[in-house]
Length: 231
Image (cartoon, rainbow, N blue to C red; front, side, top):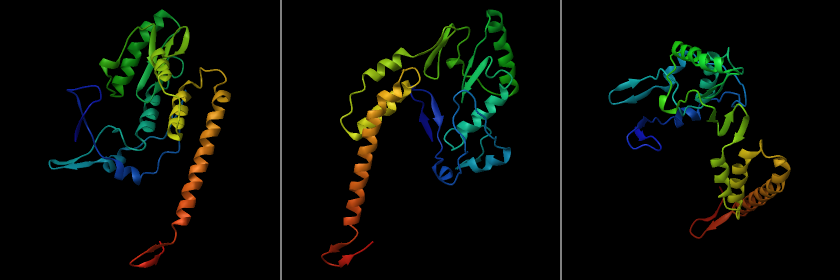
């Protein structure tokens, strides 16, 4: 069914419910990349399992659809194959986000032409609305990258300031996950966050014990009409 693209009123995406397929799919034993990673690729025979049916017939995608269990890792591996000769010297890729860079101005101007040839040969479509050329500094994977180095995006850091201090276990877990984004640029983050992580683990254990005791107490109960009942 068509679903409005987030942040847009007139752009739509074809949405398919892959939950039944995902429940029987064995995930790829791999992890998302930090700087580099590879993964085995699918072959054409797997197209049939992501086919879908409408009143107009059966449709089989020729591209990897979003939402399937291994889509991101598969796409990451395929894109790394296309850019293998340039990773990590002049290109980096995070799923479908690619950044190009060069040590000199001349190389910086010439390399995009090579990149366009590679993606054209691989039949990869680029999103012009999200592409930028000849930038001194770019926002990539949530961080501002330039010739001077990598720094945190001020907008994201400011957003963390607005997160209220936790008052419940749920709030505490959310707070830890939110601040975890700063673990690399923030010195001694692990030591500072350790007391909160210990508190979260303790509360989870306490709540889990309470639920377990409640289940044990409810193992046998009496129905006024049917008498003692056990699950």
